[in-house]
Image 1 (cartoon, rainbow, N blue to C red):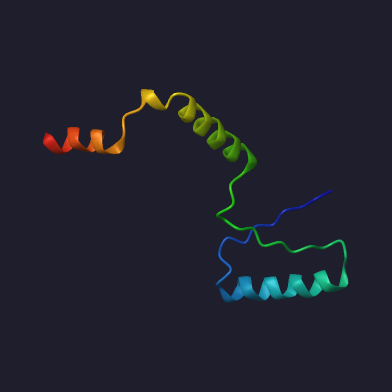
Image 2 (image 1 turned 90 degrees about the vertical axis):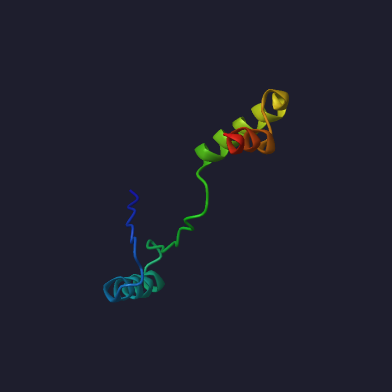
Length: 77
């Protein structure tokens, strides 16, 4: 069985204390692992969706207007 515990704000004194305690336990117990998740990492599903959209754009680039054309249209109004 696997458990996930999320600490959303690690700058509070309580969170720092809890993390220090868990890191100490992790040194003694090999079943406990502390992993810091990078918030900027994309999920596999999102990567696949972005790849799909990019591939679609490459295959249909002539169907899209460039930014300068769109900007010019709205700036004129």
